[in-house]
Length: 380
Ligand SMILES: Cc1ncc(COP(=O)(O)O)c(C=O)c1O
Image (cartoon, rainbow, N blue to C red; front, top):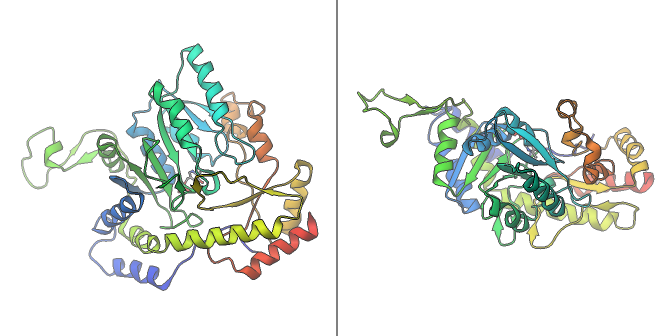
């Protein structure tokens, strides 16, 4: 089976992890801060806070914004469920914004309509989670223009999009958002096995991310509420979590980060090659918008809805590890039980029922890619 995605691990990566194993600290040594600084430098952003995975990064982002049970959070309707669950962990009410079927990204028109309704009802969201699906950045300037006048915080779920660019800036720069969240799961642009990270330009949000990441505990002398009686002293000031990344994981991430740009170049090369080789077939790749560089976490094609399920099954039968990203979140039983009806998100439905994710990863060979193309030519 040619998988839809997979990690790329080099000897340098292995050496970096082994060096930590031989060192004094496996968890809270110097490597996590070094990894955070390297990502902050890459994204040209003041703060990067690493944590245990993309889901905990999303949860920390919501906690940092003080999302609570009185609040409403809006989420793009097409994503992995974690994009919405993070707000539910805080007890918040959630609602979904429809997507453009051509990209799977949040529809600015749908957001505008929803804002008008929300304003009339007097129930505005505290935060919006936008998802850079498959590695293509959303229309961030337009989204920020709509949200900022109402003080709606914006979280970029960039779990697919480390290494992507929007206008002239790397995703994670936070020009149009309060916080940006990354995942380092093995299929993602770089990996730490499990791992996540949040970037922000806001000092207060960064301090809250750090506090809540580690039990709500601080040892920082300037932050202590009481005078320290000695070097052992720490204070738990809020109810936080153990959402820390380890030095072992950070060492892998730091090593991988050196090759991020070459990974993105390889993914873009393969995506262009798919575009060319599939151009004569009755299928369309996701629309690529101007003024952004796609990280190409996923290569997604759209086919006629009545043909999708069969084509998917036949490709799997031919050992092509295709996938579907994603089932609309409001269609999940947990969210249906909260009262959501997927029929209210026609863009998400049209997207979902037509898409197939083809294999795309850094080390996908042209021969493997040709095999995928061959089966598509035979089956479409
Ligand atoms: C868009 C999106 N958000 C959040 C997550 C959660 O990340 P993690 O698996 O690191 O918890 C994922 C992971 O698949 C994702 O694709």
